[in-house]
Image (cartoon, rainbow, N blue to C red; front, side, top):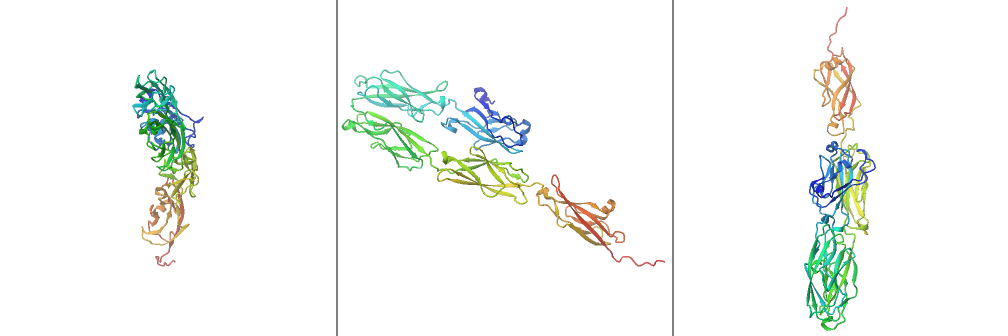
Length: 562
């Protein structure tokens, strides 16, 4: 355990393995290896022993080259111990925002043989954020004629943490005239409402200073405060009344700036100035996407919406009459997803070469599919284009494996241009293509072959020693040493001693040389077996027959025999 995990006692390793460990030569594990750690662990902290949980020994690590395949370098693997280590800052709020679960999913890659393993690290929240009010002070005007029980929505606080560490409740300093209610919006966020407990008398007290405290549920809890100044105004018989307490509307994310969202309506039974209503946002400084017409209550789009960034807005509006009395309502705006993001194919762990003797079903590459849209708009299917000896298999959510699906032959096809098309299920669907090249590596699967089935050579006797009398030639379509051919004489009908003194062959060129002058009256014909051998491992070879006929010259005078 790394220092940070040990001191805080948070890290929990939860390897989820198959019921039995698969052989290293079998396909990758089909289930995830899972760990659980707190956010903000120091760099170098140990998440878990990944090699051990995968069934790999320390001695195997140099050859298996266990590593992480991920778009963001949050983790790394120790080459010595195989431990999964924290390599970057893990800020849960920055990584996952308000999502209830924050799991970083990636693949571990091992070589020789190539295997992919799915790893999930659940980053848990710690109480590292204090609830914060958008304003440190608020002013609230309440008429002295307001009846007890009236409620007033106050400015809310925001806490980046989640769960028990998030904003828990609000508290108000003890006061005879006011109490506090903790309320909750549809999105689960909490806000305070001030409740008038007893009548106000402006002539007795013109203002009240209240302290509002926001606390989270951490242990110990973190808190912040805001000051509320309540100004008691002269009697204004009737407050404004909204036509609805809550307005709800849905908007597609591609709605243009300037489009009207809705119009809130409020009425006031007073006359004159006391019946003149103006509208405003209670937290105007925080509203950047919408504009409010203070006279008509019309809300319009100010800036472009993006479902992938913010899915809903909850806005508190205020209607104030000329006498200072106010009413409040909530506007819930749901941003609706449209298919405006193309799926993206990310290639992870692509080898430089794939050997031509690779077996069927061997993992070649790992593909990650990303689509920022949601629902059907974010569901993606992949297809491999063209007639190639590969196929793609779904590995996990948005993850595919490219595997071999046919025999590879470098001599016929030295490389393949792979094109993968990713298409989402939106209406209309969006698609993108990703292309890359796979080069096929050579193995020694071709023996040398001679250009002739056999050779017949005629040489006149009395030839000069060292003269070239023939040349054999063989080819090998393999590359490098696998295709480099050398020649040798491996058999002959001459005696072994006589062979060495009669002929030789150049190992590189295949040229056959006469080592001496031939004599037709003693040697009329002889036969050689020449071998062509490549430099592969193991080496492959081929043989050819070379027959040499020695021709007669008129080099003997007639003799008289008695």
